[in-house]
Length: 184
Length: 122
Ligand SMILES: Nc1ncnc2c1ncn2[C@@H]1O[C@H](COP(=O)(O)OP(=O)(O)OP(=O)(O)O)[C@@H](O)[C@H]1O
Ligand SMILES: [Mg+2]
Image 1 (cartoon, rainbow over the protein chains, first blue to last red):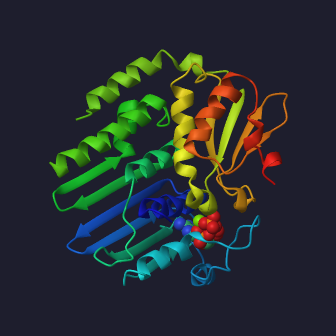
Image 2 (cartoon, rainbow over the protein chains, first blue to last red):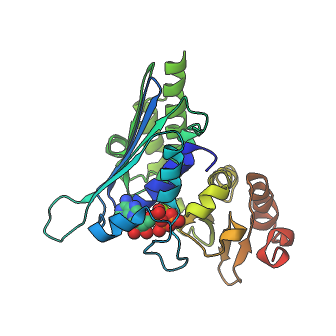
């Protein structure tokens, strides 16, 4: 992937596919370490699935045999000296908490580090495509924090859907304003 | 800073428009957003369609949505256009620029841009 934000979009799509109702995307930047956490409350994976997910020849999809999303993220972080960890708890129907957490670490001063890129575009693409899922986005960087929680927006919007174009534009500008305030 | 008060104002404005949204979906633009599509550049293509459709009078008629792998990874980014009573059009190797052109010529003008369709590229 050309930008790390594209990996984020792709990994969050896995969460959406696993019927998550809340997807939390957290990016922490401290010194030369970037930590990316994508956490969902979707159906989760069995131990067997989880073990084989890192192997690019494993996928539960039927249209094409090779799942690429997780192997690509693994490659992107390991190339910088970082690592990928996935924890998952499968929905056993008992009502117990379930879901998946993907944690990837990157050394940003490594030559092979892929820059984050247009992360705002990733957030609005996810919301536009999945207006019924809640997203909690948090990016902590040196000068401060950028946050967006669609649950708060929903409380204001009531029954107006999140994928309404004016709402998408508001989100885009709100995030851009927050980044600008930090970079000042 | 974009404030929650502004979001509230959007809500008030939209409340009165909800009725207009009904009857939409006559035309559906579907962008493939699986790993292969995303890696090949589907994100800017999708956003170009959303922007161009909403900045025109097509907004009530055309919906833009996302789907998983369409199964022809070598042609990504792939966009399918479904119109009531017509055959599906499949556009391949899309870019944001092509998306704008397709909105103008196909969605507004009614003529598919044949050089970007799968038929002309396989
Ligand atoms: N958040 C998640 N919740 C539940 N299952 C998941 C999650 N993430 C990944 N999986 C499982 O791991 C598999 C591999 O994921 P991966 O993203 O590598 O490939 P894929 O999504 O199948 O295909 P693609 O190449 O389009 O990404 C998925 O098919 C799914 O079964
Ligand atoms: Mg995937």
